[in-house]
Image 1 (cartoon, each protein chain N blue to C red):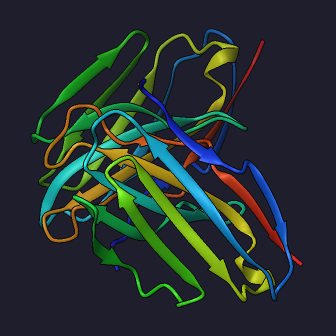
Image 2 (tube, rainbow over the protein chains, first blue to last red; image 1 turned 180 degrees about the vertical axis):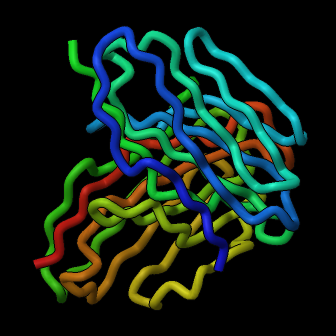
Amino acid sequence: ILNVEQSPQSLHVQEGDSTNFTCSFPSSNFYALHWYRWETAKSPEALFVMTLNGDEKKKGRISATLNTKEGYSYLYIKGSQPEDSATYLCAFIDTGRRALTFGSGTRLQVQP
Amino acid sequence: DTEVTQTPKHLVMGMTNKKSLKCEQHMGHRAMYWYKQKAKKPPELMFVYSYEKLSINESVPSRFSPECPNSSLLNLHLHALQPEDSALYLCASSQQGITSYGYTFGSGTRLTVV
């Protein structure tokens, strides 16, 4: 059973705050690490696909880093806006199974 | 077309009913997935189809029966479900192999078994 953990479970921040979340995953048999953003009543939306140790990806105010040797990834949001309110899921793919195993998510609420 | 379409959006069924969930994509993705998500839990993988062949079955009970009639369609046939099967059922698709784009998810079917 693959163990993908995310912290914190939930986060309330003020508009303009910067924030970050953690995803930890098995460091062996690494294939890829995905980040998704899931707003209520919508589909999960892919943010980043990360495959190489040391990868850093950026999309607007959101960025992510990857450390496959120690098994963690960070997601950063700079200057949070109310529209960033969503659940952020990380998902791990190992070389054997080749399908996403999700963490339990971090629920972000940004107050105006 | 860059979407995965799932129908119906909501379904209420009795324990003796037979129903089907449908999923459709026209992005040319050759991998398709069914996930089940219960409240406050992460989505859990049920089935994976690769080139229209079942490649992963996560020991799902036989009351759930997947079908992939062609490269664009994925069905999930439901029969004799239990109330604990009530959940959000998500379909997704992706390119094969390492992809820069991640999975494309549908918005799900909210299933209630009564």
